[in-house]
Image (cartoon, rainbow, N blue to C red; front, top):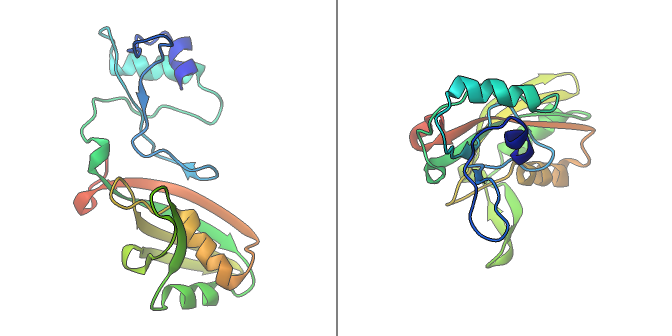
Length: 189
């Protein structure tokens, strides 16, 4: 994104010091292998330029597959992030029945790594909300809400790893983050 901002000649603010860089912030960066449909990036500008002009210039220089949808002044701060919603598509023999058994259990234990505590076992069942699940043959699509942000951040790969530990290897997995949420379920903007 720094290269795109440079190529688009956006008057972005640079950090100071020996090696100045464009100051960028991604309020909730995506994990590797997860698709994002509505992601956010914060940066400061040093000159007056319209939001439409920023959008147009950036879209001209971004690689195929990336597109700026909207540019606006931030409403929320990263500290306001409370959760995220994901769409997960997976396939395997009798996956719907196994998934139902997995999510209806008393616990969903995951191995979570912490810088302070090392590896801990965490029950994410109280923090996981299954919004929908649809089976089509040996394919299952589930939408779920997980906590995200500074207090508790649960990556969907933890959920999938716990499921695969019980189910076995999944044939196909697709994960897409569809929303970033603030407290009380409002969308982050």
